[in-house]
Length: 224
Image (cartoon, rainbow, N blue to C red; front, side, top):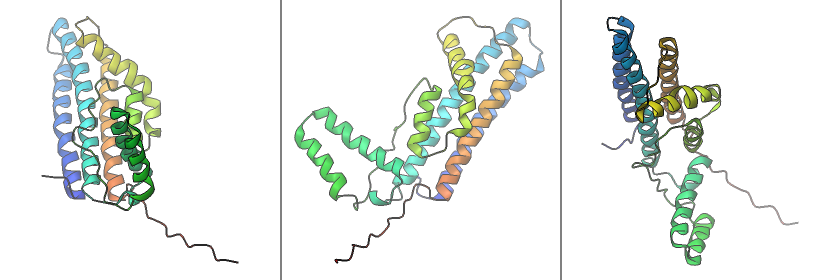
């Protein structure tokens, strides 16, 4: 079912977040029991880091694509899209031009933005965001693409890059890494907090129509 309404978007985000939080909480509960040998507990901690990253990357991708789908389904003219979605449309047109490197295509791109802004928009949303290795810089680009506020995440950049992504890559590439349980607890809390915040940002942007830009009518100057 296409995500055409606020209710469908909100339900989709809630379900995506719920099952991920359930799995992460279940794994953390096993770690907190401390009923395993030291070796098994260390294995659980390493597994916990890889699961935290998997659900972080997965939720950001799925929820971002869901929001893009919701905006696309509003069928707004380009002139009524917020600047970030205009930029997204521009990128698609320029990417198409770059693939052919033909002057005629570039001319069509220029004509599109000069004369066709009143047409119904077409926003690519299916698997739009497929990036792996979700570093803070990549995440920032996604936040910008969606027109969200990045300020909340600025203080989390070291955590994302050093405590999550770097450690996950080390483990995923088959290298041994000791994970401190207190560090894991902090990482778990922060990742859940960021996913909650990201979901709330999308919900808020959709409900307040921040993707929508009111077109101002321009009154021509009077002739003297």
